[in-house]
Amino acid sequence: MEEEKARGIKVSKTVELFEYLIAVAREIGWNRALKLMEGCVVSSALRWVEEHGDELARGGPPVERAFEIFYFEHLGLDPGEVEIVERTPDKIVCRWRNFCSVLEACKQLGLDTRLICREVYERPGRELLKRIDPRLQFSRNYARIRPYADYCEEIIELAG
Image (cartoon, rainbow, N blue to C red):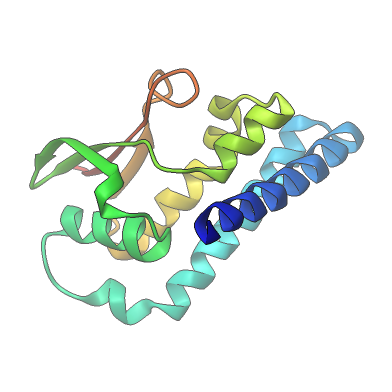
């Protein structure tokens, strides 16, 4: 019951945030509003990096380290909620079916998760991974993102 209440609060706060985004977009346009929000989320991710720098420096294979740090330590996701469909030393492709306040808020407000996630939430992931190892890349498969698919598919890989 507590978890359900916490999720409801999280969705409410995300809806409020996106309502503000919509109001700002009416004044300055969608592109500028999305860039402003993206900048805020990037700043938040980089603050997290500053506060957890020691965790980023630990050893191990970079892709595995990035996967653990990004999803479980930074985002606080449950390891039991991920399906890993590809795992090599240079790449992890994962599918998430977890609770997501961004997904729920987008559904409530009629916003497209493909737009919101690409324009606001993808770059923060890339920036955080670069702090773990500059060769790391983060991407999302926008053909496989909720609510257009049963899961959100994301990729962490080592370039070159």
